[in-house]
Length: 183
Image (cartoon, rainbow, N blue to C red; front, side):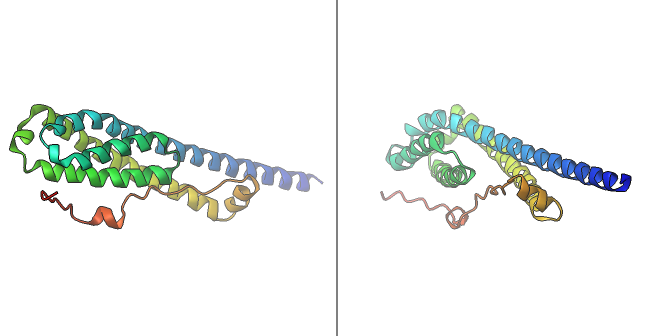
């Protein structure tokens, strides 16, 4: 009788331990995502000032500047990791275009405000890359825990779901930026 009680107690403790570990990992994933979200929001907050600084110098690049503004608006409406990752891809590509085009405007490159904002954006991009790596590492650990025995049984019992990785590299993002002044 005592042996059965001890075995049941050990099983209950193991289930509680695995469950608590899964909850802890899920919360780490949420925290890691919030770090990305903060950095992406910081970048989107910098963009209006950056666009205003660039606008006067790059009047014929109106489509690019308009796209940045539209992406910023779309960001506010995005709710999933996948949606935000796709918007991040588009914005990164558009910002690369602006930076490439700015090379042809010596007065713009010499503008103190442009220089400061460019540096802020570069620093933010570095923070986003680090946060994205940390998030993906955390999600991988969490998703692995959901798949390995015996935690996969507990995860299934308590309806834990896999999380998406923050994939930002697309075929479009890997291409060189094309600058065409004939438009």
